[in-house]
Image 1 (cartoon, one colour):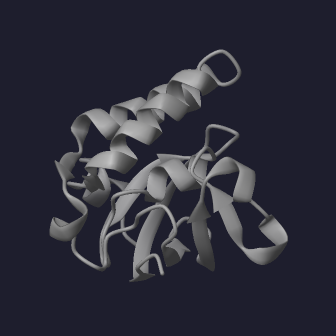
Image 2 (tube, rainbow, N blue to C red):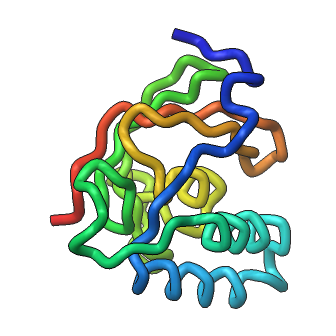
Length: 136
């Protein structure tokens, strides 16, 4: 099912675990000189998120360490990745950093949600969460 961009123009509500929100804000500030646009996107996500304790976050919410299946609705391609900290990233294993455009766009979303999000080139993509396996 392809969604017109207008259906996801408003960013969906997201939830972040309190400790992860603090870590993401710190990482974004470190990233600011190297990639100011991505740093701002990540800071904006932290700012708009509903911050909750780890015991109050639903299991199908994308967190650091979650395995996520998502569809890029713009291209129709499906992806299965694990969202990780930068030093753990390994694209060959499907481990993407939270400090990538896709990683920053996925964090805090839940199964079934979609978001219009820029890729590294600045082109907007629609990402839809198919499933989430919580960090193990």
